[in-house]
Every structure is written in structure tokens, then in C-alpha cells.
Image (tube, rainbow, N blue to C red):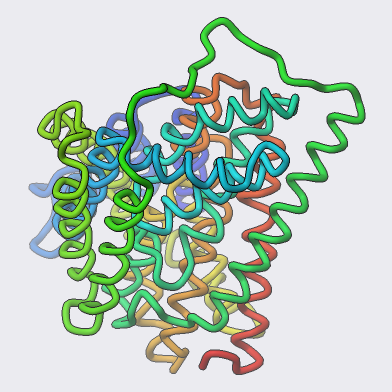
Length: 439
């Protein structure tokens, strides 16, 4: 009982401290200590025998294990995003999409620009920074309430593109290591779910905006509004080619190299961006340096949460919780989906939720004979649902830092599109897999 209190209390404390702004590199080990103390777990390796669990060994094992497995992917992904940003290639692609769709379809233009960049492998955060000035300009021209901009950015970035088959985003690649699948696992179901999330999400967003406008809401200008710079940008084609390079290389090598294909694909994207757009760079090496620092922060924050999971998974209460989730009646995919989604929600990280849950769940379900492709896609989609609670890093950064909105004004729409719709999409995926589609 005390162990369960420690586990739940530790997770609640982690959410609370994160929402209060505490650095995850501090909050992670602090909450792990809370769990360990209430569960009676020894704190130091000197207090236990060889092979036995203790706080420091298990925390650092989870932390360092995640860094070892995923550092190069985080590094090259972040650098790719930064060189696309610094060269103006990302701006060129998003501006081209906006011009083609026009002010009449302002919301669709924002969502589409984010979707193309995200599915091409550009970091979610870079996409939001890149598209926001144009989104602001479009919403201003169309006189739409600016508090819906974070939701439009999020719909195109962290829903149907992030967890779909073929996506170069990390959330689609982590299951490969544990399930022996490919990034295209369950693509038939993934395609149906992605189309559903995109269409229904766009309809819902437009409906929310229409209701707000009917109530008298309009665009409100602010002194510190960013503007779309009139600097010379590369041709949209030279911005799209690096995105295609990432997708093509990951497709060609995914069978032979598994998750390592992503390293080659992102490196190819960086090289293609440099070769095609080198005359447009402000400073290529500064972009590489900024990307490196961004990767260290991103993987450090995620690893801090995974380290917490490394402690949580050895306390008695965790196995009790896993047993409860994996013994849910009906499709075994339901238990896996709930486990990953709940852990991702509590940690505020889709990749962290997968990295904590899959080492424990994958062997269990593989032994049961669950189809690994169906499990891969279910886990990927489920990780992108409850992860978008208010304390999620992308949510906080996009709403507050990039868009300058408050959670009170903007989070309702973000929650609808990045939590509720993915949950419905997850249910749809489980139903389709249960009917035998894509298996």
C-alpha cells in the first residue's frame, strides 16, 4: 500500500513540479527519491548485493540507457531542424503552403505547413517557431482570435504526423527497438486513423473558431508581435528536397538498419539542406551549435523522466499496476495502449512513456502472440494522446513562449485536438486491428 502511495505520489509530484517550472533534470531524480523512500528501496549501490535494485543504479541506468540508444537521433534531428530554420528553407516551405492556400483558408494553411515540415523530419519545436509568424499574419488578416493559433500549430505537428507510419519523428521509431518492426508498421490502419485525425481535428478547430467569432472575439494586436521577415528565401523546392531525402533514405534502409536508418536519413537531410541552400545561411556552424545544445536539453529532459521510470519499475506497486493494465479484458492492444498512454501522460513525454513502458510490455505481449505491427502502431498513437496534458514541454513552450498566450485561453482547444482526438483515433486503430485490417 505504501509503495503504491509512493508511486502515485511520485508521479503526481513530477507533474506538479513540472507545471511549476522546475527543471526536469532536478525534478526527475527528486521524484524518484520520493518513490524509493516510500517503497523502501535502498538508495545506494553499496547497500545492496550484486544485481539488486537501488535508487542510484536504477535511475542512472534508465537515464544513461536512453541517452546511449537515442542521442544521435536527437542530435541529428535537432541539427536538421536548425539548419532548415537558419537557411530559410523551413520558412520557404511554410510560406509557399500559405501562399497557395491563401487567407481564405488561413487555418488550413497553418495546419498544412506544420504537417509537411513535421512529416519531413523537422523538429516539432522548430516547426512551431518557423510557422508562428506566418500564422499570426494570417489570423490577423482574417481577423480570427489569436488564442487558437497554438491549437492550429499543434494539430499539424503533434497529432496525425507525429505518430503515423513512415514519420521520421522519434515517437514512431522507438517501438522498432523493442518489437523488431519497421517505421511503416500497420500502415493501412495508420493511414485511416491519420486521415480521421486530420479531417475531424480540422473540422473541430474551425467549429471552435467559428463559435468564438460569433461571440464577438476578434484578433487582438500586441506591441511585441513578430512579423514575417522580408528576407530573401530559397526556392520552396530546395526546401522540400531535404524533407524528401529524409523520407526516402529512411524508407530504403529501414529493413537493414532498423532504427539506425534514422541516423543516416537525418544526416542526409542536413547535407542536402547545406548543399542546396548554402548561400542562404546566416551561419551554418552556429545553426549546428544551436541544434546540438537543443538536442542536449531535449534528450536530457526525456532521459530524466526515463530515469524516474527506471526507479518506478522496480518498486512492488509498479508491477501491480502493469499486471492490472495487461489483464484488461478484450483486445490485448487495449492494455498496451492504456499503459503507454498513462505513463506518457504522467511524465508529459510521448517518447518517455514509450521508453519506460515498452521494455516491460513488449516481451509480455510478444509471448502472448500479439501482432507486433499492430502493437507498434497502437503504442505510437497512444503515446501521442495523454502526453499533451498541461505540463507537456511542447504544450508549455508553444502556448507560452512562442505564442505568448495563457493556458486558460489557449489550452482548451489544444487539449481537444491533441488529447481527445488522438484518444478517439487510438480507439479506432484498436477496432480496425481487432477486425483484422493490416494484420
